[in-house]
Amino acid sequence: MLSKSNTYLSDSSMNWLSACQQLEQQGQAYCIATVLAYVGSVPRSSGAKMVISSQGQFDTLGGGNLEYQVIAKARENLKLQRDEPLIERFALSADLGQCCGGAVQVMFEFFQTQTPQVVIFGAGHVCQALTTVLHALPCHVKVIDSRPEWLEPLSEKGIETELHAHPIDAIEAIKDNAFVLIMTQDHGLDFELTQHTLESQRFAYIGLIGSEGKNQRFRFRLKEQLTNASLLDQLTCPIGHPDITGKLPMEVAVSVTAELMALFKTQQKPLPKNRDQTNEHQWQQANQARKTIKESHK
Image (cartoon, rainbow, N blue to C red; front, side, top):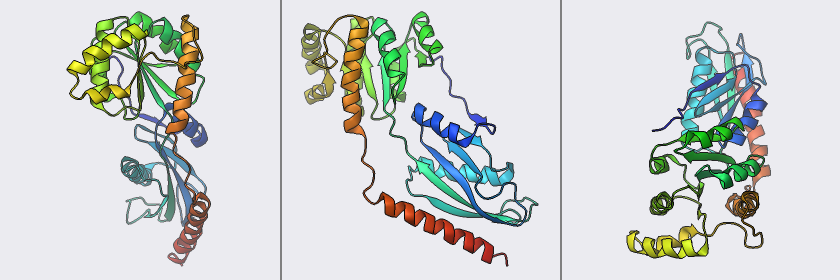
């Protein structure tokens, strides 16, 4: 059973910059739509912005069918994982059925998030300590467990939680390239989760808490049950930085965090070498758009 439901969020009162910061923290891709130029009567003037993600929209370009079309265009390109900016012209009378009589040029800028996603199976003592540290770092953390009493303190701290009677069922919905940590209260469940996450072959990291003895026992069994024994190369056990030892929950948390932070750095994509040229080209497009829309209404 899944207790968490996704909700569609619309908040026209939230400032666009605050929305960007929130979406970055949540690890969601988003689009900034900006009015570049306009002629005639329009809902918002040049410089007005709104932010659109796959699950919500923030701030406003004035509402109405214009905003509806802008949101649809943004989501269409977010789904395609577009990186390059896009400039579109909207005529408020003919195209959108609005009586303003003007026209606007809108620039769409797309931001595909690189925020690491950390998914923890098991909300026990180590998880409670680990989330305290990770919550202050630039990553998004989700904890999955079958025990509501262990998830509640995490939810109160602002950590995303999911209550599953059968945590195995949660694997399918985890995003690709996530960092998965397995630390439940049940060794049998740990084994099942390890087997299923390895078989999925789509995560950046799969870490299993435990001693070297547990590691050897699990690997022996997994070698017999996995479809390909080479999948074991994806498994990290024991977890944590080798130079940071200790058995207390917070000691383990610090060690695991150090390991994850090093891995986050290797996963991040470098900025394009031609970023300056791309920005310059973007503003050339914007200036040309302003000229075009004014000339078309002379």
